[in-house]
Image 1 (cartoon, rainbow, N blue to C red):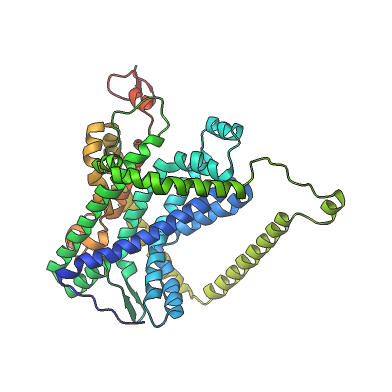
Image 2: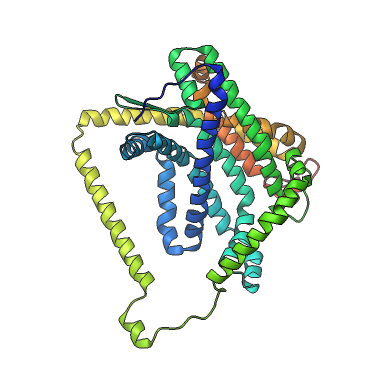
Length: 435
């Protein structure tokens, strides 16, 4: 693999920011495709759900850096004379920090589709692809966008680890903001650290203004409520795009004809729901089981063999560990658990009341929502070299900002009528009436 030298001069920061943004975008596109495919299969196929949902829970519980050695070494070996393997490893590592959260959000939205809307789609005999685009995707849009923002913030957090990889005695580097900050921290160059951090914050702010805030404002039209909320999201960028004559012309001349062409093609490929298909002869049906059932049996058998092989390999590996090492591992795991629990409790102690207060106050919600989003996207690993002493005395960094955004996400979608019940002066309170 060709060696890459990280330049700490300020002139390379725009290019490095572009490299990092491109990796983040590729990982997000991959995460979004995985979310829509995996989440829909798990939500609509009851047999697959039994395996896919627990598997997804296990995957999101595995530390992201655990994927690093195997993925990196395999891809570097596949592309030994170029950095393509490193680039793919970086994108896949960022993907593992984004996909699980988004998939669970989409799966939950699929499982909680409004019954009346499902009945309308059945009565109107929507084809599967039209049902997906007209009903399923719009119903999950708000939650998917908010969880995408959280997943994108998680991707920033692991940007440094994905762009500068150290495995044993081998070190792999890719040009980008993450590797720039890591190289500056290793060199003790405080000026370069501050410049890199400023470039990262500027990139995050621009993304919030030009991408996430217009997306949140656009998705507000998919909110299912009987009353209009007072804190409707607003974006000047989205307003400018809607007023743009050029965008309207491109949409009319390019996207609409292309959409009609794709729609006609998909209509031919997918029959209407409940369309009659030739039934097999009774003798054939009794002698040959359905292909889908045979494929399910084969899949379950292969999955069982793979699970048994993994269990046997794990037992062979664990029996080689002596009792002293087991004691050290248990003590280390307990210490890690205590640190994580302390950080979580500190975060919950103030993010719950702060998140609820911001979510229920439209004025403060409009003012602080962008600030929280930007701060949540700044990775703790980027500011760690500068704020080392402060972070040692103030545990909980990433946890509290993540919880803040999660509680904003939980409070914001509360329907308007429910907000009315808990406002001051209302006869309703948490836990019953105000009497």
